[in-house]
Length: 264
Length: 271
Image 1 (cartoon, rainbow over the protein chains, first blue to last red):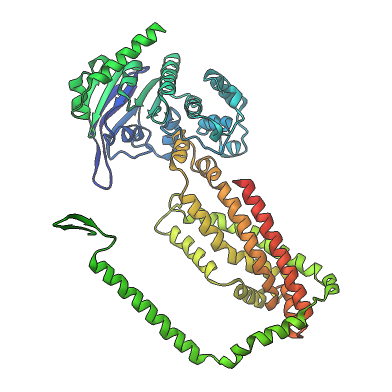
Image 2 (tube, chains in turn orange, red):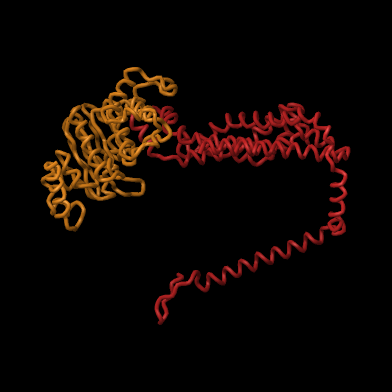
């Protein structure tokens, strides 16, 4: 479904953020991308929808190659990729509803969007999504009145209303507390399962990643160091990705949480 | 390196000896320049007039008080003109400043190499000429009257508004813009959804701030014939009608206080 071929990104400063990444994600697979800060996780997902221009290599979404698209075709391609951000990246001074509907901007003309005259079907879908994430009563609130978890739910709605084929998720839980983090991760994974969506989730929290995803890719200094199921993340593997550290606790924590979950 | 290693251990000082000497030297030069300038000005001043100043000021004060209150009937129209010059001038200035600001901001300009310098030049050029001088020029071009005043105020304000606005545009959160771009929105949609909501409070603040300044500036435009209360002021000054002058100054003060109050209220409402 999504295929990266020899994707390279070299910043103008000479930093090589991505070194010839090859990666293939089948439809409906949720993949966690882990790795230390500066490993190129953010750069990688931004190279897919070209918020960052890749230096070389190819990105294939379904049957289309994205790196050579002109601006109009790129906009149409971006509609098929929903993005969720670390600090939510909601437009703070707009209402929750406007933020959700902004996910339809790629489908609606300028004046319709400027005058907020979205098609009724879009508005209906926005209400359905807000209801699904439990925020329908907040539709008229301004985005900056919401708590972190609520904002991220709005961010999820904005990505889903695009009706995307894939979700690009950049550190969805980095600014949330542990409980909310788990709720958000669960919500993203559930929604992906419901809609058969593929997703790439950048995440710092290894234990959280292990709990929710089917496949983990470990990035280090712009190269893939690990690609496999979450059970494959042994202390040795984590050491190659992150460097020397006592990893037993991290892995045990994940297992403990599973037991607690089961007990509940 | 303010950290010095001595045999008693590491010592920290704010400056090294060299830096301290340099500082003293700079201060010395500054004070010397001040003293020399003072001396030159002193030589060029007729001190007799300066010593005389309190007496003259007292004399003018006694002539100017009490203000000629019934003159106020003739001031309603001019002060209304003055407020209109300020308000219309500010509105027209904003219409011109907004596009200039978007062209000048690093993150929205279509071309950093060609268009941005032009926009920056417009900002500098309009800011560098005082509104009185603009008014003089415009009176020569379009004749005396309120219209010349409005245009003078608006041209003078373009640079100010555009400069503050483009700085606000450059300080927006890029992540919100990125998020809107990622939905597949067009350039104009990104502008309307990602950028405009973020700079709207700044724009409103700039508008009332400039309006406030323009009330002050437009009170003097009449001195050169560009309409408003300045016309009365210059006429009264010319015939040494001090009681009228003092009343006009009181009216100007009232208008400025009103402007200040309104802009403070508006700014409080935005934030």
